[in-house]
Length: 116
Image (cartoon, rainbow, N blue to C red):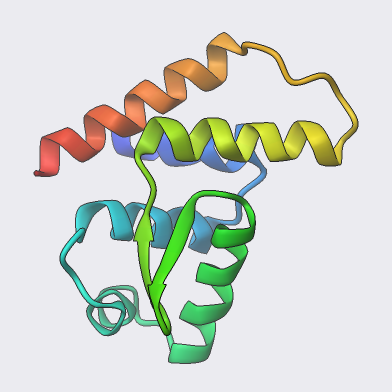
C-alpha cells in the first residue's frame, strides 16, 4: 500500500471519516485554486453530493465555506487536530495530545506541500 493510501486509511480510521469525505478534503487541499465544479467533476459527484459532503466536513472543522457552495480546506495540521478535538467532545473524552493524530497531521501537511 502506498503512502497516500495509508494516509487515507488513517484518516478514515483515526478521524472517523467516510471515504468520500477523505477524497473531497484531499481534493480541496490539492486544488486550492480549483472551483467546486472542478472538484465535483474530478470526483464524479453531483452538486448535491458534493455540497452535503462539504457541509459535513465544515461541521467537522476541516474546511470553510468562502462563498455560496465554494469551499476551502483549512491548513492540514489545523484541520486534522480540529477534527480530533471535535471527536473528543462528541465522545466525551478528554482532549489531549495524541501522537498518532500529530503524525497524521504532519503526513497530510507533507502531502499538501508535495503537490504545491
